[in-house]
Image (cartoon, rainbow, N blue to C red; front, side, top):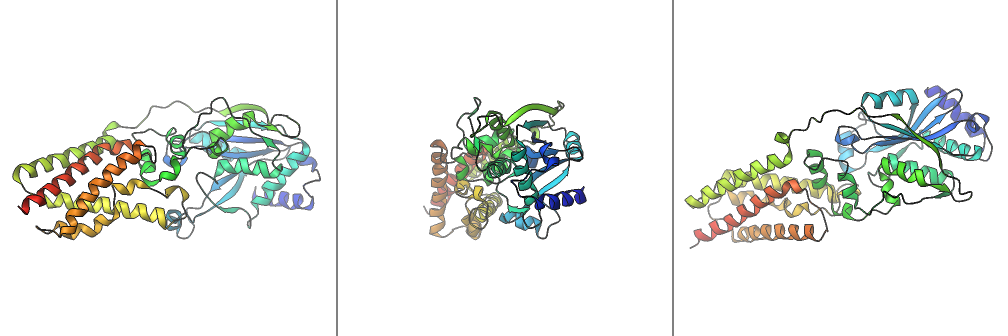
Length: 389
């Protein structure tokens, strides 16, 4: 198949995009939309172009990456991982997603021979080793937005989008969370790792960062010059089989954080009755929240990820807490540490304000833990005040 693609690329390079290739003229071009999978990395679907000729049936899709690339995890964390465009046979493509039990929908495109040649030439040009790699962005440059952008470039902007009836104004975060179970670790991780930048309203065009919305918008799209619809027909190649959910409430973040909160509040109540302080609990809380804060600041300031900027989760996971651990080992800490505890309470109040005015949405499963933290911090302020009396 790779040899076939290379041969085709050489043939197409001989012709300009204005010249027609009989093999491409009679080809069927379509957009494939893959439904969500069961894991977080495939929870939002996938998209690709299908080109079916009399001698081949291939899929061209973006958003692929190599697990074996040097420094894979470091580059991924820094937002510097190279993604690329790939091609494979339709049979292989289909078999993978049928095996994963993910719905496959197809939109056959209503193209003239010239439009087919323009799109095919663009895809073959993108497939070249010097052109296939690009800097991935989950919201603005992914497998779905590439379907939109390639179509616009190949046909010189000759597309007229019409907003589907199903459209309603939502933030990027809401659009993501609509694909996830709210009481899941994936949903929690996204709400903690991604910042306030994704709490802005997405424009209709920006909705197409998700494959399902590319499908919906393309259904209503026409060509500006002719008024003809972009999609000739749509059908489902494979429909997902319904399966029982394996999610258990007993391992859900809400239950885990509720239990942790009860433990924190119980220990705090016991300390209050004895006018004492459990150092181990405070060391654990300051270490964990501080390290999470360091990670969030790294994602915010030291990476190329656009979606992790402006993350006000640092209001509860404040990185400076890791530098205050030594004060927790002392019976009478420095005066500035009492001020720092008051600052932590103020920041939790600010978090509530940010949430209420819509500046950033936080993970709802965190509420029990946030209540426990504010109770613990207020107790520590009171405890240190009694030592000075």
